[in-house]
Image (cartoon, rainbow, N blue to C red; front, side, top):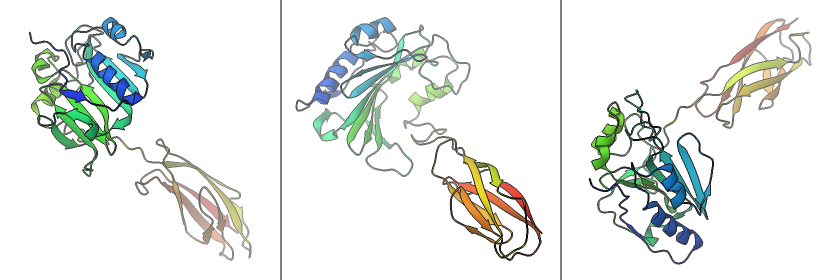
Length: 288
């Protein structure tokens, strides 16, 4: 069987920088790890000079001088979900067998300083909009990919090459589809920036009064409580049936000066960038 050693088509020529030397050394060490063969003990031995974090699930991080190596292992169990793409659940190998490795570089390496044979690599935009600097370069036959930013390469990815796809779990149709399709991203996740967005919502409005006498100085203090799961900057907007709002933000004043007796409403909303798509709250005030 053809060896699954990571066949790196890269020759790095760094001009003596600490990060460059560390990356060169890391590449050499990672080359000793055989995907779908090497075990966790093998990895710990090969990367023994690196700072190792505690295992998180079937992932483990190793760090050294401006870079981080993330090693992913098999869970030893094939997922029943045919759409599963997690590297720990899709390979029919023993638990704690290496399935994927990523080298993440703190300071991206300029493409011009790296001798890389890009001819067999396909190029695709990482984000919607197609910024020419943010690309994923991949060669599935070799099992190598690189993600770039404006500063150059920020991540190197080593995964089992196309010839290894026969070791995929029988149910992993999504994972098998990765080797069949021409692109890097699936239709379900067409770029790096696809994520589920949760809108902000108003949870409460506190008013200083709910009944007020009609007068030339009838004002109510308003305090709005809102939450946003993604901690986006919020813009507060108010809709009132009479009077005017003084101020902006979560704490404002509702001016009902010279408003005729009756019932009036105030509705508080927040916009986290998606428009007024979250939950609103409405309160009623009686002017006597």
